[in-house]
Length: 160
Image 1 (cartoon, rainbow, N blue to C red):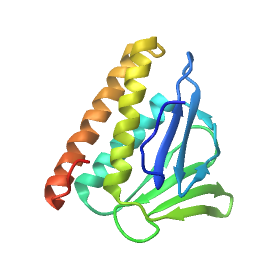
Image 2: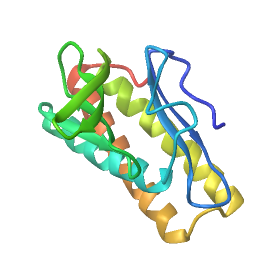
Image 3: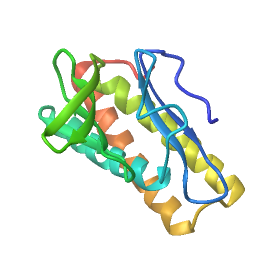
């Protein structure tokens, strides 16, 4: 497993394997979603998550949804407010929230940026993915990092 943020409040767990399918899941308040070891396409979903998170940070308001390619699961993230992170499952009748937490958007973005850094380094060192996928992941990470820097400047928050 690739390491995670020192903060137990919110983290993204990943495990890169030689193929494109690997483990990727989200943890908030020690609740693992969709479940520990969930397999999906992390190089693709992490790029999606980075792009939407950067847009949310730039807008400073609204909500986004982190989608998984496999299964009816998503993480709904609001820019601000209590319970701004919701683990959701799509049912025929609508969404069912399985867990909610309050996590600053800058912490979410920072954890995602660190996860992308680890995935890029690991994928590059093991040549585990096509070059185009890594290039796209690097571009998404760079966009997220720029948006996070702007948000920290606006709020006077340190980059720690």
